[in-house]
Image (tube, rainbow, N blue to C red; front, side, top):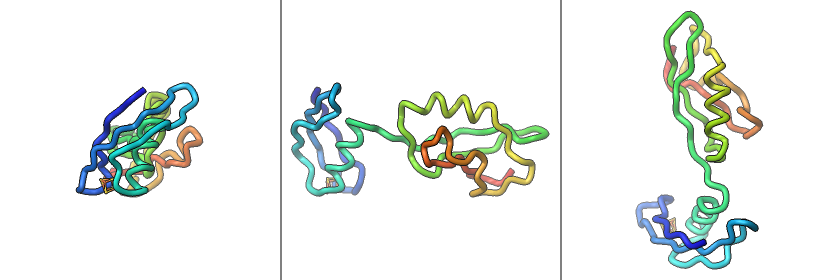
Length: 117
Ligand code: SF4
């Protein structure tokens, strides 16, 4: 498979072309990257894309608390993470930065409050 990406790691915005095998997850060819960080970004975006999840969680007693992952998680786990978040409740006194769900689905990423309750 071939893909063209705009690197978002720095403002230069290099256009990177990647050819990779979807079955073996092997990058066969890459052009257009100007540095190692761009190479790593393009490789991850094609082989194992990750995203930061932002959403809300119920607060005990009522209301919704904005939350997010503190590290990007595999894109294919977004739906399963939302199921866990939808079953959770945040304490009434949650503060910005508090861990609401630790290590969600074993990803190493915590769901943290992005505002005070
Ligand atoms: S490849 Fe390197 S120089 Fe180009 S946009 Fe990405 S980080 Fe910046």
